[in-house]
Length: 276
Ligand SMILES: [Zn+2]
Image (cartoon, rainbow, N blue to C red; front, side, top):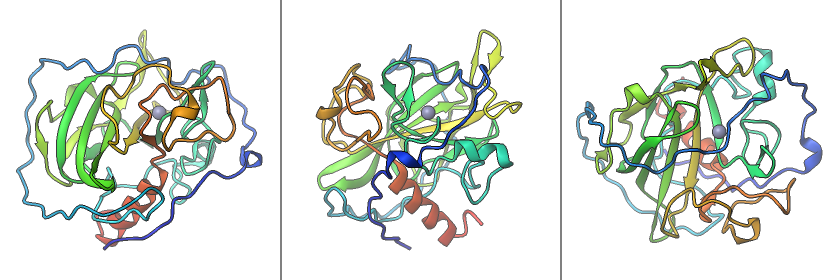
């Protein structure tokens, strides 16, 4: 069942909430060190192929997100306002705008902006493909986790398939490899644990934190998803209300805020009773 929803642009900066962090909580994602390196490691693809009928949507930017996209999990995120694991998770509500570490365009480090929405789950939670597609890349990512980039059979901009970056997955449980075709709803991996030098991120403390770091690209341009510095003004869709200049997503210019997609996908998975 398709759900129609307008793109929700950013709320004003006054919505940012004051937060206090311990020094440990301030250790978030470090700068990207390794990226887009295809691994020769072999993987087992376990899910059976499914025949999926998909009709490309005629759409333009800011048009509703339609179709049969599924949420990448079968349970609710621990940092969604309707299902907070406990009150500590309210400070990581991913549905807010530029408000905390889990939100899009939030400042990371000195000048990097967060290119994703972070969905918090316990380590090991299965991750599922939002619709059918083809794996473009499987490689190392932040803090001992890996990334899976998939070009999906869905067009938000007519004539261009979206690319979803499923980041911070467990490197030991990845079920797909570059070139694989994946079916809608197929399990592709599991939430990983962010570790560095034997320590893991506590976010919120004292939990061992896992998450899906989810980026979406419209597919309008080609090239690596992480090209280094890209001026904010050159981004086709992604905006940063709080930080105008001197900041960069350090991502390809067709990056787009995943939140409207996530809202639609969550509604679709609830309507299909995949998430109850
Ligand atoms: Zn993230």
